[in-house]
Length: 164
Image (cartoon, rainbow, N blue to C red; front, top):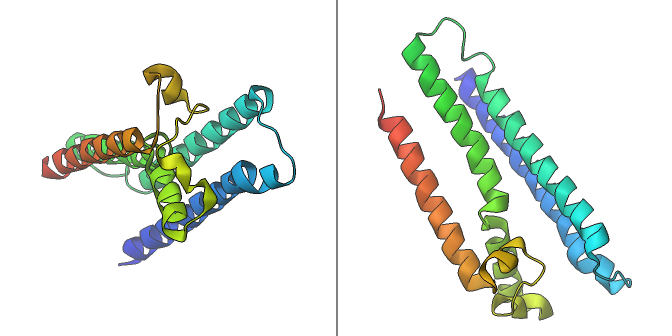
């Protein structure tokens, strides 16, 4: 029971951290523009790189935290399952960022609130890396990528849990 409480606490702290990180992203992408920030790839690339490194660090932290105390006195088969689950935990955290989930959530909330930036649902997200790959990228494509990511993760989790 103590392990379950520890895991729930860790998940709560992790989600709070991710909320704070998303809030910083909101400040950069919305609030600072009202104070005259002008988009420039010179600062944006540095910001995106650091943001991506933070997400990778959080994924590694989540994965490492899962491994702590689980790898002692277990069989090789159990270790393999622990490694798979730990890797999936990290992949799930990264999917929140790279799979488009937070963009979908963020712009969905803006749309519900009637925020002026909710137009971004159908406008080309020219700043987004996927826009360079696909030539055009907006919320409908983001939702598709998000759904593919969620389905892939669900299949992976199901396969790991199914495995004995």
